[in-house]
Image (cartoon, rainbow, N blue to C red; front, side, top):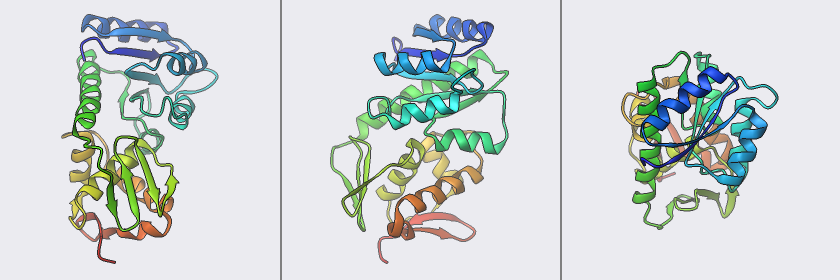
Length: 231
């Protein structure tokens, strides 16, 4: 992790240098881009270990860059942390729906930045180590955790990284009921600053994308959600 390569995409030169300085001080290798277009091109060609992406960029904004990264097979697995001056639920949910792994609101503490970076990189390492290669199968749903693919009745379904993580947790524990906070802790780690409403939005998106199989994700009133396997 100490030598991970991180791409920072930020149009404010002072913030760009601040982020780069703190990352380099911790032993990370840092590449810098001042526009979304340059950042997208660099990430596509070099595939860094992590992308730190400002939302309010000139030209292609950060959310569009994130969307494009997640649409391309080669860059889809890249972890993304969004830098944003906005902190309301709508902006947070939008970023997570696009597949961002975390977000940091400005102004931020450099210590918090480093902690978030290490946490995202560590989660990626843990997930790779925990995948056995055996697909998960529950009632017509099949998840290949190595290739990060989900199929419904043998048809490939495109879902975001966050939706994938939630579905993986539910498929690993079919029939078990989880609160929204338990789901957040399971897929993001403890004390992750995501609202319970964010989980509801992710579940809604999953149900739509899974079609008829979406019915197996059941709301347990007053508690949370579970993936049923007995319908």
